Length: 298
Image (cartoon, rainbow, N blue to C red; front, side, top):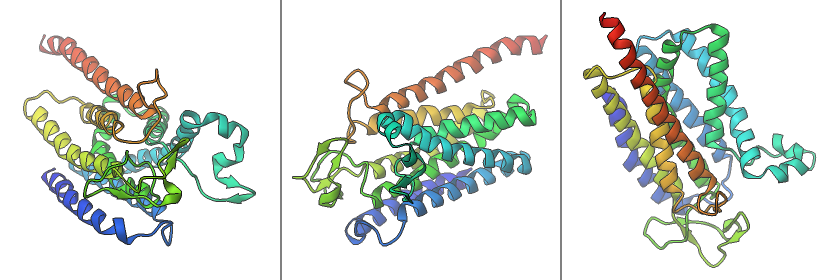
């Protein structure tokens, strides 16, 4: 697993270097669909990491591909439905065709996706697949452990789509690495930033933390296995805890309306929920192991 850690650390300066060049070199709108290319590249990279880990963990590769297909279908549906339901349900209620990307009788693409919708949609899909195929629960959790680092890598790469679209940026700033946003993109959710031209590149902050998270995730996984504390699903729970925390922190510098109790953004709310899910799962498994261990010793 050292190879994945080294790869993720190498990508950090590569990402920053590429960003500093492309920030001024790539026009808006880009000459072709770089948003879609970013998402596709992230998905492929995430799958390659997943396939690599499946082999290393000696899991069934055919079953792994079946679960991946379910996750892709569920993730795509969840990404769009998550955005529709949680970000602007009233608008889409009055413009239902735009849910599937049809505007004025023409398909213009899916404008608006939710990462948490992707994760939960994919998770629901693989849970259904797990039931249909009658996969033992502990075995199923090992496949989730296999994919967890791949999800972080896929997110880090996929976020470049936000850069090329000049969207989901942070608050105005004059730091040397500030994101240049063209005048026609300096507004969001009814908020106008017309008098500013540079903003925090939150996509890059999140991507950097996700790459660091891959190393930390693999390190903790290895240490827990060495100490005999590892249990199936542990690595997957680390994704919920790590990304939930990252998203909660990033939202402090990202331009988002405080819609939950007037103090939290939707991203922060889902981030907290993700952390709680990860922590509760770990507590449940730890208690279960403590109960089962004495019985095994008897």
